[in-house]
Image (cartoon, rainbow, N blue to C red):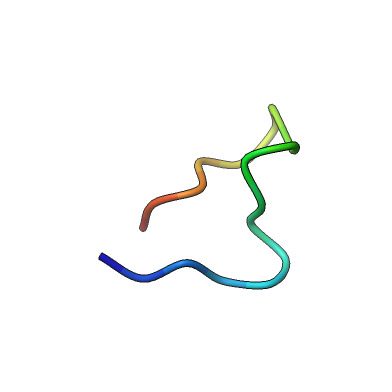
Length: 18
């Protein structure tokens, strides 16, 4: 699984795991 800097777990709008 990849963790992107923009998709942090703190952001509810985007999933942290893509």
